[in-house]
Image (tube, rainbow, N blue to C red; front, top):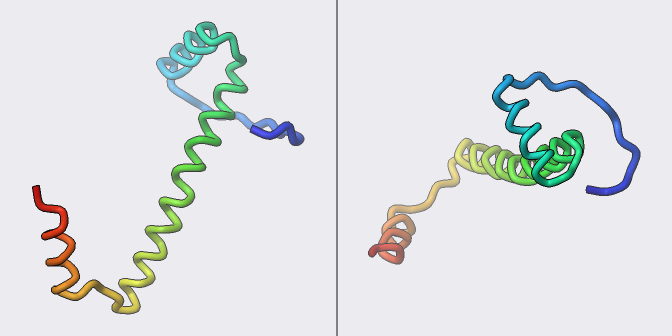
Length: 81
């Protein structure tokens, strides 16, 4: 994470998640805030591109841009066991 200005907000979690976070923070010697911020950053780094790609794929399908039967067959032939 960058050392830019930080904002605070509240998140509600189950007691189980809170307990696990407490244990992990103690194990690694980091604050719960740092662990949570890093976890959220990692999650968004993964989910944002995934969601963008899905939206682009849906838009392409809506435009009728599908693989041909030959392209599908070639793909599966290339990935057979």
